Amino acid sequence: NQSMLVEDIVRKIVREVNKTPLPVAEHPV
Image (tube, rainbow, N blue to C red):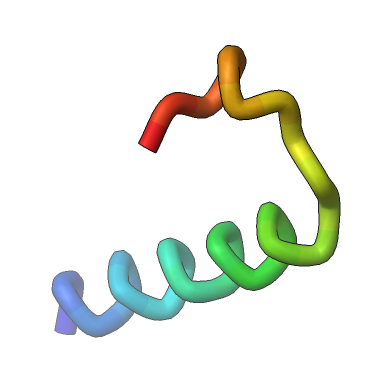
C-alpha cells in the first residue's frame, strides 16, 4: 500500500525533526 509507506516515511521524518530543534524561520509551520 503506497499511502501507508508514505505515511510511515512522513512519521519517521517528523520524529527525526522533533528530535532536532530547528530555526522557525527556516521551517515555518
